[in-house]
Length: 318
Image 1 (tube, rainbow, N blue to C red):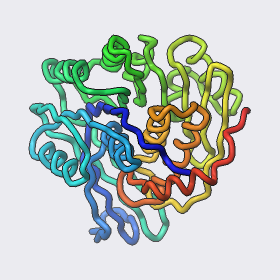
Image 2: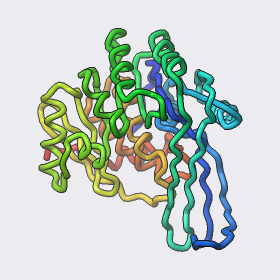
Image 3: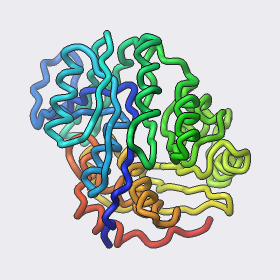
């Protein structure tokens, strides 16, 4: 299977981008000086990851980012090296740096995610102005909000998208996520189990619990559809007519950073092509699986995505 040629521009918002530093070491031990290998740096953060994957799959994306200090300049340099179209708004604080360390002997990954710089009122307000003007057929807001940005920021972003008649896709966490759903303008919500439990205000240990919580969001008008990713346990798509489930694909895992963003990119890319939600859901699963087979942050290869899409059977009703 192959993606069609997609000319619809997909704009992504990344309020808290990061320099993702990924290394491997033979064994992680306390107090020892650990020599690393396979070191790499990637421009990261949810919106950037989504934009990178859309580009890799042959689509049109533009990452809208906040960047500050010397690390912000490095972020722009990495975006340019990757060929990701972007617009950067300069801020006073330094762009954060996050780290991923893989213990090669145990095949275990340790991830250290920085909080990010404090962003002032005029700085985050400029992003709303930019979104109101950018050429976009879809708008994806993905990632955390840095300190200083109000929790209702994504709700305001959704309102801008609604005014422009642009589908709004949300993938975040914490108060920013719950506030972002309050406006009722979210076309697609992408969630992890932890995030869905936070929204629901209760644990969701079973499929039935997860379906009920996702259905509450859809039938309550907070989101048009909900995609729940569960790692090795597969994924669920809640539509107004009911849930669809897909198992995880059996692949060799080389890194998980950006896997959820890759899933989202594949699904949005397919929806922007005009594919049905169930078909787009299957493309999302294939893209997320391709991402974990590759080194670095959210770097699935198109040929791998297309091969894995051929292995997806379904999706099937619950």
